[in-house]
Amino acid sequence: MNLFLELRRHARLADKRHPMYDKSRFARFWIYLGAVFWAGYLIFIGTTLAFGLEDAPTEPYHILNSGLAFILALDFLLRFPLQRTPTQEVKPYLLLPVRRGRLIDFLLVRSGLSGINFIWLFLFLPFALLTVTKFYGLWGVLTYNLGIWLLMMLNNYWYLLCRTLLGERIWWVLLPVGVYAALGLGMFLPEDSPVFDWFRDLGEGFITGNAPAFLGVLAAIALLWWVDSRVIRRLIYNELNKTEDTTVQVKTLSEYKFLDRYGMTGEYMRLELKLMLRNKMCRKSLISIVVAILLFSALISFTDVYQLSDFWVMYNYVIVSLLAFSTLMGYEGNYMDGLMTRRESLFALLRAKYVLYNLVLLLPFVLMLAGVVTGKLSLLQILGWGLFTAGPVNFGFFQIAVYNNRTVDLNAKMTGRNNAGTGLQQLASFGAFALPWVVYLPLQVLFDETVAYWGLIVLGLGFILTSRLWIGNVYKRLMKRRYRNMEGFRDSRQR
Image 1 (cartoon, rainbow, N blue to C red):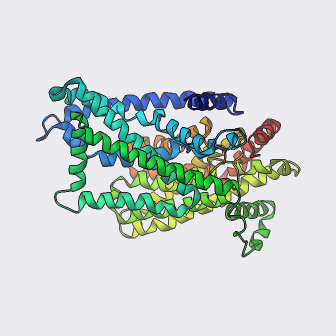
Image 2: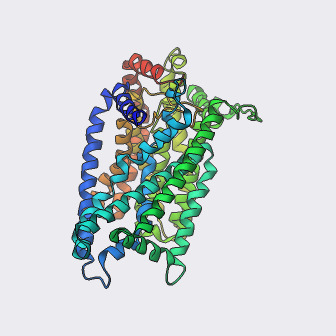
C-alpha cells in the first residue's frame, strides 16, 4: 500500500516538475473547462434519455442496457487520445530496489482506479436516479452504477492490452477490429440478437445486485489485469535488453536523388523520409496514418456513413495532420544541437515538413474519389476539406513548433516518456477538429453547401500560397526561444 501511495505522489510531482508545466497552464485551463462541459453534457444526455424513453414499450434502463456494447466501444476509442499506458512510467524506477513485477502491478492498479473510468457515471447516475428508483430505490441506483464502473474498469484493461500490443506491432490492430466486428455480427445478423439480450440481462443483474453478475465482471477484470501484467513485463524486458537489435538489418539504402533539385528544402525532405522509415516510433506513426486513411476512406466510400459525410471527410484529412504534427519538433529534439549549427536550417526543415505532409494529403483525396464515383461525395467537397486542412489547420499545428521543447524518443516504444500529451498539443488537436466547423457551418447556414466548400477552398489556398510567410514567422519566433527550447529538449531526452 505504501508503494501505491508513493507512486501516486510521484506522478503528481512529475507533472509539476516537468519543463512544460508552466507553459501548459493556459491550455490546462481550457482542458479542465472542456471536461466540465462534457460532464454537464453527459448529465444532460442521461436526463434526456430518461424522459425520452418514458413512453417506450419496455423500461428505459432495459433499452440503455441493451446498448452497453456501443458505449463500451465508444469508450475504448476515446481512450486513445486521453489515456497513456503505465509502461512509460516504469523506467525511472528500474535502478531502484523495487521488484519490477510488483511495480508494474501497482501501476496497473492505479490505472484501474484512475478518474477516466468514472466519466460515464455522469450519464448513468442521473439516468438511474430517474428510472431505476421507481422499482429498486437508491440501492438499485448504487449497485447499477457500481456495475457500470466495473465495466469501465474492464474496458480500461482491455484498452491497455490493445494499446500496448499496438505499440509493439501495428498489425495488432486486427485484435480489437476482430473483436468488435464479431460483436457487430452478433448484434445485427440474428433476428433476436444474443448480444443485446446478454447486455440487457447483465445490466439487470447490476440493478438487482445479482452476485454472479458482479463476480463474472470481477473475474474478467482479474484475467485481463493478469494478461496485461505478463505482456507488459515481457515487452519491457525485450526493449531494455535490446533483444531485437541483432535481427534488424537495413536491406536497402535510398538517397532519394530526385529531391536534389529542391535545394535545402529537398535535403530536409530526404532527412524526414529517412527519419520516418528507419526509426521505430516514426515508422509506427507513418503506418498509423496510412491505416487510418485506408479505414476511413473505405468507410466513407462503401458504407452508409456518407449521411454524415462532411464530418468523416474532414476527419480523414485532419487525422493526417494530427498524427504528423502533434509532436512537431519532438523527434528533432534528439539532435536539435546539430540543427542549430547551420544557418536557417530550421526554416528549411519546417518548409520540408509542410510540403511533405501536404503531399500525404493526396492519398485520402485519391482514395475518396471512389466516393465521388459512387455519388456519395462531390469533387468540390473533398477538394474543399483537403485544401482547408493543408492551409488553416496545418497553420494552427505549426504553432506547436514554437513552444514544444519535449524530445520524443525515436525507438523506445514501451519505456519511452509520454512526451506527446502537453496541454498545448491537446488544445491544438481540439482546435484542428473544431476550426473547420467554425468556418463551414456559418457559411452553410447563411448560404448553401456549394458556397461553404468554395469558402474552404479560398481560405485553404490563401494559407498555402502564403505558407513561406507564416512559416518564416514561426521560424523567427522559434529562434527567439531557441535556448529555452534546447534546454527542454536536453532535459527530456532518454538517458
